[in-house]
Image (cartoon, rainbow, N blue to C red; front, side):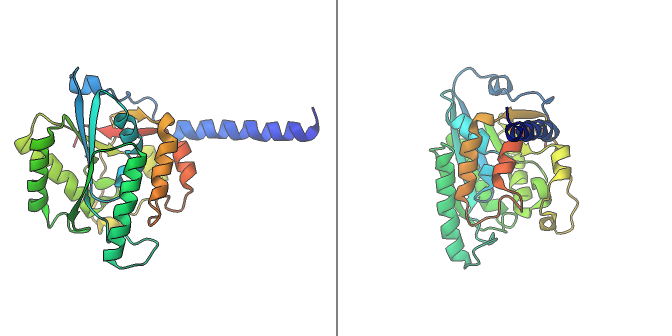
Length: 263
């Protein structure tokens, strides 16, 4: 074996070791794995409604979840996006009308990549979810009566970084279920404490309000769905999903998605 080959193998081995250490650091493998049958207690088909405030919210924290259960024959999964994200002009610098059109198409491409065939994008206003609480509550109540989900998935109580739309939608879901649909289980998507401390989140969106995230109580391994999740993320070309970090690196490192059933 030549010296050059030995060096290459040594570098590859070192890289592999570093990757394993990084995976252990960012993934809370001690948390119990998500078990949908155990959670619901149902043996027949389980219905899941995933609801998010903006296009791309479906992908980063729950893309693996959607890809997984969209392919599960024992599950019927639907996704709803409440707004078209017309305020989220991170890259293109176009009008809100044009951005809404662009982001709606990006959402449709991404959700199809994840394998979800049943989806809707509503026409409420980005940045005004709290102001439109009554109208959203009425429409969501009608949807719950129609679809009758066993599980709803949405952001945890602080919207991860205090985004007013995230926080408002989670409160709408929580209050509506508590008042009118107490049989539905809500899963709140979140991140681990270690990850929350190590990544840069746009906390300025909280407008100086305190942000206290609900931490996970369970994890869903998504390793086999990471290529699909990455491809779905890539559909949101108008957004800076990596926040300065390569998307592929985030996908490789985060091999679990995290949830809690505590508000």
